[in-house]
Amino acid sequence: MNNPSQGKGALKDDPRLRPYFKSEGERRALTQTMFNQAAGGYDSAESLTALGSGAWYRRDVLKRNGLSAGMTLVDVAAGTGLVTVAGVELVGPTGRVIAVDPSPGMLAELRKKVSVETIEAFGEAIPLPDAQADFVSMGYALRHVDDLDKVLSEYLRVLKPGGKVCIMEISRPRGRLLRGLLRFHISVLVPLMARLTGRHADVQKLWAYYGDTIEAALDPETIMDALRRAGFADVGCSVSLGIFREYTGVRPA
Image (cartoon, rainbow, N blue to C red; front, side, top):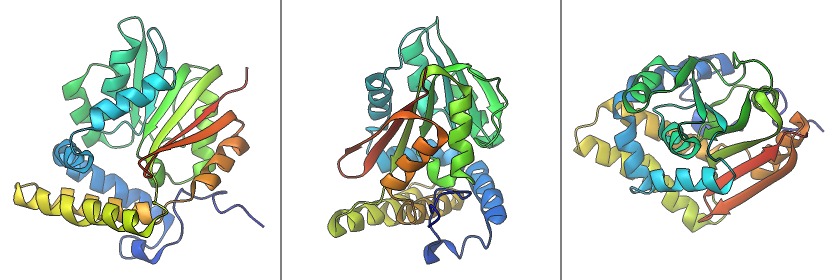
């Protein structure tokens, strides 16, 4: 039986997503457009989603997984730089941070916060030489990739031997009550608060889509299998609050 992630993105075929796009090609164009249009209000909506704890959590995840002074970090799907900023703090002045994202609007917001190298590109084709990074990060964007296997293979390629990948993601909770609360918070409450605080409709649309992609996300076991298939060793997955997952793997030496 074929693995459900092979040659595909990190989403299941779910009826909730059909109103948004009809094909994988349409999905890429849709997500890039939505992120571009919502870039200016993205951070405010994200702060509502994380209830103000996002910055602390992202830094803690990177630190616990070994990002430290002097390292080279490649932050893929960097967006407005929420993970990038935490990475800059940890690698310090002797380190190097490269932010990769396909959205020019999101990268423009990132550059307002921090001075790092930026590359406008998709994770499936990162324009960097082999073995450049000590650490590759991705924050809450795995669900938006077109080809899961290709993305993970690129992560392995740009890592130095012994380098580590750390993918932060929100997964569909197993319990019905927690699943319902998460969906209400992301798909209903955050868009409502964005509307009441004067945020434009693009942010509301993006967050509604965000909630639907959580429902359609691949299960953790499938993602871990994909990491192993790409060639990663010491593959692991930890979970906090039944929602926040950290997928990790190491490029063999």
